[in-house]
Length: 126
Image 1 (cartoon, rainbow, N blue to C red):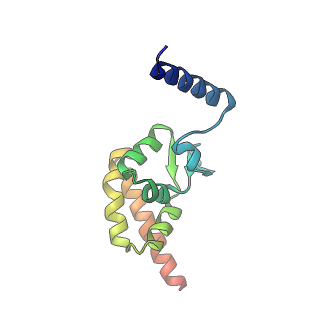
Image 2: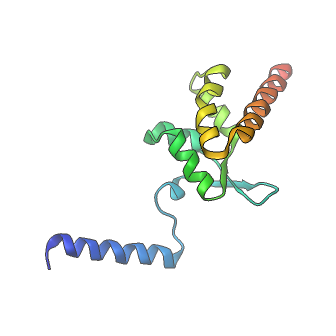
Image 3: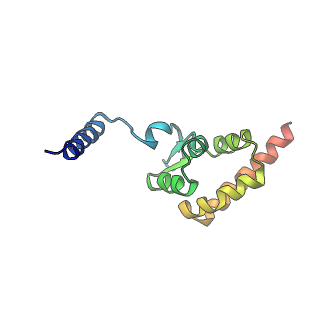
């Protein structure tokens, strides 16, 4: 047995072991669940940090989440983007296309409108 074949077998065993033990691996290990929507989708926190830290494109990350019936914690996403000196218009521009690709235009409109309203409420409190 060659070295590469033994590595493949070892990798399969580890993968089976992780599935049996219920361990999360990869992005699922880094991204915590912070809640559940009313329709049963898991809300995932730390999406902006994951995007910035690991350089994963938002489009790919959002599609990965959508395929697994998950959604980002949008308020956390917005807060983290603001902490990185992004302005509201830039955040909306950055979100629009990946949102449309992953969840569709209607969902993208709802998220962007809700974040805009939320920002306006935050500005009133200051």
